[in-house]
Length: 122
Ligand code: HEC
Image (cartoon, rainbow, N blue to C red):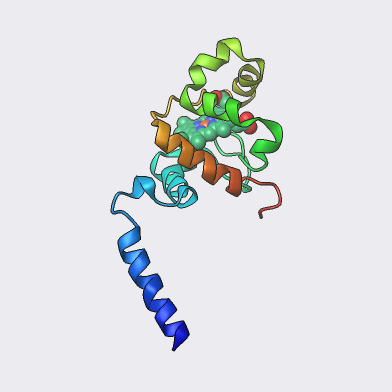
């Protein structure tokens, strides 16, 4: 019975607690959706090898978060000034386009990528 009451409470909470606007949903979940919806999957895999761009597995082991944020928000701006971005572009031949990610979308993408690209995650 106690379990049942707890369960009802949980159902109620989740029904009222989750706003219809998915922007404020769980960052990782929304980030995963954005990773597909924004077309990142056209060029990137996580752990399935190089596509048009690099496999993002282990991303945060090789780049720090500030770099990743700057890069995703405007890769083109970094090809000139940042040696890492320049080297990547030379290696992959294609320049990653500017993806038009808002600040809140960026937070969600980063939250997702931090989990999904961790090297211990298969
Ligand atoms: C049209 C193909 C394309 C799309 C779409 C794309 N990328 Fe990229 N991305 C690349 C390429 C190619 C590189 C390698 C650097 C270069 O040549 O620009 C790259 C590099 C990166 C890097 C740096 C990887 C590293 O090893 O340091 C990150 C992070 C990244 N992309 C994330 C994203 C995210 C997130 C999205 C979606 C919002 C996205 N990319 C969409 C092609 C793409």
